[in-house]
Length: 435
Ligand code: DLL
Image (cartoon, rainbow, N blue to C red):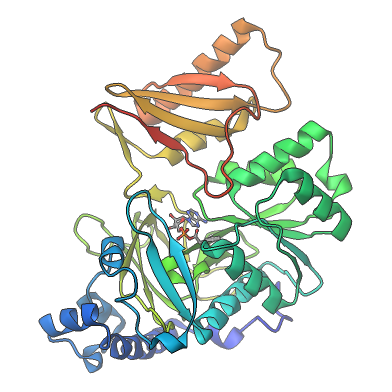
C-alpha cells in the first residue's frame, strides 16, 4: 500500500472495522456533547429535547441532536459558540459568504495539531513523503487553505514553499529553481497556470519536476481533473474541506482516485435529503452533514454544509475503512432556475470540459428576464479564427448544453486568457436578472 511506511499511516485508526469506528465516534460524540453543554446555544437545544450525553447509545442516535446551520454561526458571531476559555484559543479563521458577517471559527492548540495531522495522513495516502517539495498555491490569511495545508505539509516533513496564489511567473521560477514535486491549488488556478505554460512554450513534463497536485476548495468535474492531468502531466487528487470543520483535510482521495475518504475518526458523516432532513441511502445524492467529534475550541453538531454528494458503498482497494464520498456535485444553494428548469453549474462545466476545442475558463451570466449566456474561452492551442467555424463551434456548444440542460443558452466563445481569474475561489455565476 502507498504510504504504508510513513509515520502518518495510522493503520490502527484507518482500518478499524465499522463497529470499532462507530464505538470510537460515539465516545467522542458524547465527549463533544458534554463540552457543548457549556455553550448557551447548544445547552438550550439539549434542554428543549431533554438530551444528555449518556442518552447517545448507538451511531443512529446522532439523529437526536440538532442541526447547526451557517445562519446559526452568523447569529452567534463573533464568539458565542466558543466552547473553551479565551486563553485556550490559538487561532481564528473566517469564512466569508456572499453577504453579511463572516463565519468565525476558533482553534485550540490541539485543534491546530489535529488539523495538521489529518492533512499529513491525507498526503501520505498518495505517497507524499518528507523528500517532497510542496508548493502551496493557496491564499494565506483568514482562509484556511494557506496556513492549514502549510502546517500539514510541514508535519509530513516536506520542504514547504509558501508561494500563495502569486503570479504565474513567480510560481514557475520557484518550481524550476527549487524542484517542486507537489502543489495544492484550486482547479481554476491550475488551468490558468497550465495555459500560462502552454503560451510560454514550456512543456511541464520536460522542464518541471511536478508529480502531483491536490486540487480543491472549489467544485470541479471529473472532466476537469482529466484536463488538468493531461495539461500538466501529473496526478490530480481531490481535496475537500470547509472552515467550519478545520478547513482542508476533511476528505481526501487515496491513490485509487475513487472518491474521497472522510476521516471518520474526526467527523461523523451523514448525507440527508435537504428538504426533509432524513438520511438518503448510500449512492443517493443529498446534502453532506458533518459533526466534528474531535474539536476542542468550537465543535459543531450536524453542520449543514449545503454540499451535495453521495456515500460510496463498499470497501476501498487501498484498505482504509473510512467511508468515501463522491466529488461534490454542487451546492444545494447554487442551483439556478432558468426558465423553470433546475440547473447546476457543474452540469455546464462537464459539457464544456469534454470538448477539446474549448479552453479552461468560463462564466455563466444570467440577465434580463431569464437569459443565460455561457462565456467560455477557446483552447489556448488556438482556433483558426474563421468566423464561419467559430459560429459553427458556438452552435455545437449551445446544442450540447441544450441536450444536458434542456435550456439552450447563448454561447459566447472568447480568446484564451481573456476572462478574469480570481486569486481565491472562482466566481462562475453572475446573476444580474431583473426578476
Ligand atoms: O475551501 C477549505 C479548503 C481549503 C478545502 C483548501 C480544500 C482545500 P471554505 O472557504 O470554508 O473552506 O469553503 C468550503 O468550499 O463547503 C465546498 O462548497 C467548497 N469546496 C471545498 N473543497 C471542495 C472540493 C475551504 N474538493 C466550501 N470540491 C465547501 C468541491 C469544495 N467543493
